[in-house]
Image (cartoon, rainbow, N blue to C red; front, side):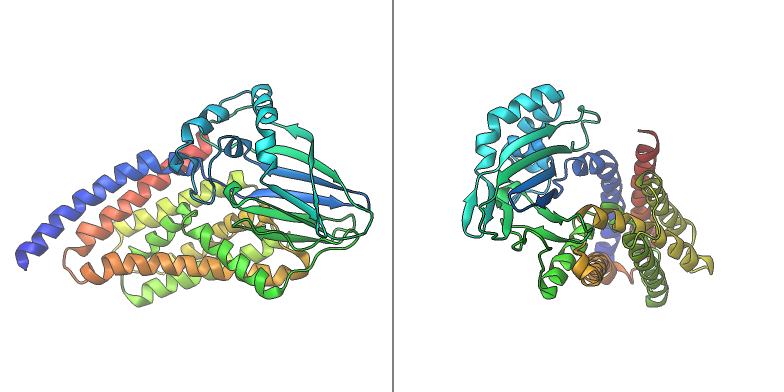
Length: 383
């Protein structure tokens, strides 16, 4: 048994050192091609429906099945996506005109039970910019409505990925739905907003919140792991998680209500800096200091703003605002608890009582987290 423990204590540092290199070299590029939800804004009048879709046009043109992969790099059509991503706007526009008949087949629009055929009414494509980041194009569609007054339903094929559908009304009221798996929107009346059952809204936003942590929220995952690797004792972990949860819940609500607004260009680098701080403190300190929960609370305020930025992109159904907000926050909490639970099951439970746990696991892991956070900070500020 002693030989086995010695072997583990010698192998784990090497494994974690390799993890440092892998994270530092590959983590940011891997997330740069993340398939994000497209956002469709519908304006419905008595005679016409106008649709504006903010989307990654390259994903559709490359034929990437967004229901099967969460990152374009994982698709067999990744090379095609990368080639399209590098095109200038005029060239990508030409590719769209060629590919539109195929894309149109996956877009579903109807009034009542009457299928409608939307036609392109404009396309705005920005310059290529940073090729490691997705490019958001704006596609405008329109269709004439039958004169029977039936409500409008919109959606698209599951292979096109998640879709946020928002009904835009002049009154400022509206409807927002998060669609996956080829689902269709709620029927949207022509003169008033659609209404979703509260249970469906709650379930949808729990899922969105959870997915924002696992697997998409790598920066938040590393921060939570930084809290975990500080100490396996229940009291320090509970103090930190409670402070973090209280803080990000407060700023998430304030930002969602429009009371607090800070640009992502400020928030994102500070989130990266928070990851570095907690990880470095893990290496230098061996016990809870009075300022640790206070600092974690401050960083939680920043992470709450990061959560709010995602929620702001997707939107909340005004009629179910509180339901969606609570569901999203619960999803975030479940994601965080999942990360801590997995870390405890893989590392804390089998190795936490070993005398070499801190030296061979907690400190090297914290070093890995600090290096990745430092890389992200430099990238977000200077690159």
